[in-house]
Image 1 (cartoon, rainbow, N blue to C red):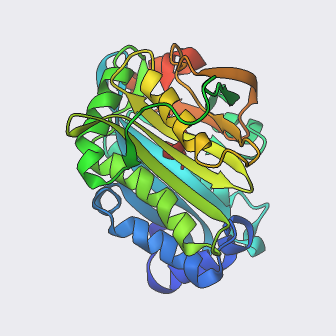
Image 2: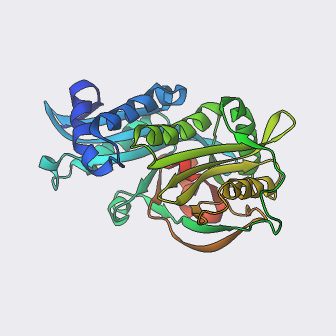
Amino acid sequence: MAELVSADGAILEEILDATHEIWHDGLGRAAYGRLFTAQLLTPWGQRHLRRLALVDGHELLASAKLYSFDASLDNRPIRVAGIGAVFTQPAHRGRGAARDLIEQLLARSAASGADLALLFSEIDPDYYARLGFAAIPTSDRRLLVTEPTRYGAPATMVRSGDDRDLPDIVAMGQARAAPFRFHLHRDRDLAHFSIARKRLLAGLGPPGVRQVQFFVAEEGASAAAYVVINTRDGAWTLEECGDRDPTGARVGAILQVLIARDPAERRPAITGWLPAGFLPPQVSIAGEGPSPEVMMVKPLSAAGEAVCNLAESEILYWRSDVF
């Protein structure tokens, strides 16, 4: 009978060899392996990220990543099991290995106290629907930044962000998340993990292909707003942002400053997820469409059952936290 084991040593290398072909994201095989190892070495990754394998004897059948999150649902604390990178070894496809893997992951997570399973599907969501998952629609929004009528950048103090800013980022996130029915509890370690993962992907890739911009606007000696932007091929993805100002005006000013650095360059196409009710006054929505990564959820306890009736406007989830 197939059993679930920790993916270490030779098993992990076999998984990385196979998954690199479809999920390399521009990384060579060695860099692809270092990316996963580095995530495991972060303070949050050490406690909340594992890779598991479904094996039959010495035969590797399928594998997945398992994340554990603390979250809030209807103002009650819950635990979330995040399932990512589900992969069946080519020689074992079409035999139910992925289904067996997911069912064992769900059973193990429920037994460990998880109230909710969460995943992001890039394949036909009907596959996961047959396993009891429900989709929560999310939208990619195309953003347009209004530039100041006066030439140059607005008079906003902007600098590169770093670890000293994480407590302020967490505080901004907690204030922003409070009205939403569902959101992750983003403590310092999770905020660090989310940004570090993007930076690692950029740093391990070919030079100049991808960059991560992490900037803050200061007020006094602390960060009053921030943005994390992933840039590639002239396009920007707003991974996450925050602002002490409920209107988001400082976030809008940061975006104006970043664009004004290269006045002769073509203005970037910017996409991102924005929580309901948050639109900086300097930003307008130029268009939107369904996200290619479909958020899917499944209750694992009575505390998680309310998740199935959530609307997009009732969740706060940043693109940097997609796994």
